[in-house]
Image (cartoon, rainbow, N blue to C red):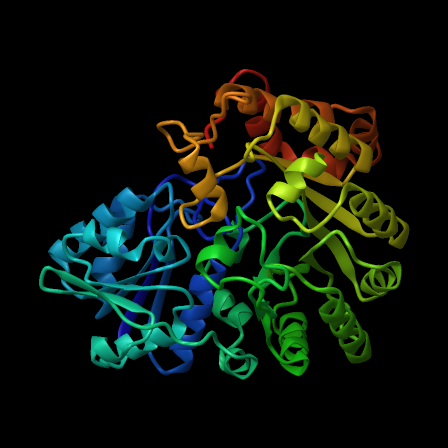
Length: 465
């Protein structure tokens, strides 16, 4: 079957493929990792695949429409976003009006309220909740919709939701061809970049789900693969992909492991296997701020470059509220251990949590400046329906008409000002300016686009989430 996988046109550089959707202030562009795995799975089943990531490739609606019409797909797989959902569905309907074909909506955002999403479309008749490779494969094989688990579909004016299937096992994940090979052959790799990674880089996953899985605000652990669950590929399979990247994609300078949380046990197993295999390729990952020194040292020895760490808040009250499962003391200890091991850290911080106050937010800024991660992000919280965070904010009337945090003690305007203040205080500190002086190629000349975008945003321009 001819299958077109589409991340639809919206705004240039808009990311609907990350754990939240926005246009990054740092010009970061992650790979459409989940859609990529679906493409790799389908290609491995013998289907003819066309993969279009329109925002990353600066494709507008008309250019994308020409690609779709030219390919003339028998099945269209549509990956939607939260901000872009109305745009995505309208664009799909316009395509199907001219080129009728079977169409299915996929992705974590589509899993939030599948019946509501499906009802908004005139022509799209199917949607997959959660993991979607197997269900999409069954649609391509023309299995009767009533027998496809995870599927929500229209039957006349009625919307039917089928039972859920079990999450994919490690053995099933091993059977999916390498996503790195799929991206090599199907996208312009030069379109994807992030300040924390050497350029060009590649995204892969060694497992799915989060071993912690309790953060109240996280989209993926509350809608995609829920709760405490971490299903992993065999280490032999992971190392073989690293070997493939090193040998067959020699221009790739680093690998970002996109597992929700790369656990201490997983990191140890991976590092020992990578060192034993003699693979030199640098890599990075997401971790929780509670890893021990011996593992961090081992990670450095195995070529780890950067740790993405969700510190989130400098307030113990807020951390408990959002079920982060980490304390300020643990954060400080971990950060010192990582620094001593020679690892870089990208720190994620955020504003707009339930019951947060300006005083709590100031503690977050102070914590970021105290920890001094190599880079830092200060996010305005995006409340996703389907998360406990969204439920609490909605029940208390703490979201404004745009669906953004707006509380009596910490208004939306104050939250925005605090985020701007955080960026100014962190990136105009003596510590960071000294980094710029020591490494101007990396921090200044290598980030001119980021600087041009960031300066107006953190000083005078309204910051749109």
